[in-house]
Length: 110
Length: 116
Image 1 (tube, rainbow over the protein chains, first blue to last red):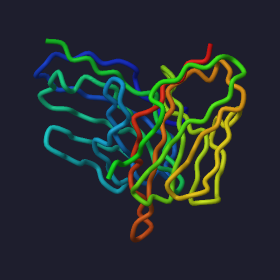
Image 2: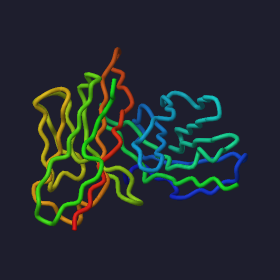
Image 3: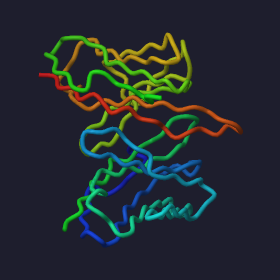
Image 4: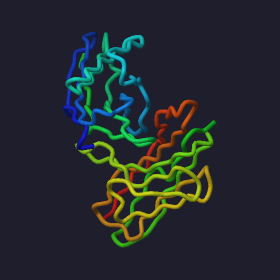
């Protein structure tokens, strides 16, 4: 996933908001995704945004897309211990294929 | 629906051995793919298939073979395992819906492979 970049680690206190950032390079991306991976498990789709949208909200999750800067963020409100996981940003550039970032490991501390 | 099922969950191989990682999906998805996950590198695409009888290479195909004889199954073969192939392998599937919309990828739970 060299075309998609995200920071590797984030530590947040329980109850605070988490913000995970991602940059991508392909301006023709149609959809951008956030996946969550819990220890020992596969990737689970959290949310996604179409490229003609600026924002999408889904309960505690808010996705912001800045197409000009090719920047995507995921905000998790009221972060809980169950939110500790690896979060992957991914872009759809060509047909079925997705390109993934390296993943951000989020640690929630009490 | 079981979704995407991968077997085995864990495998240890010696250098030079061969093996097949199994992947099956019961959602009638035409697209199936294999990724490997390595620390700090995210997921990298190994091989993919857009339908039975059709396969193609991803970004890291060397040392791996695939075939797609049925819609449901997409096995990944390691021909002669090397320590560099120690990784977690994920199979994922998808479909193209109405208006050429592609569904998100559905992932299996992964196979953790160690090559000594």
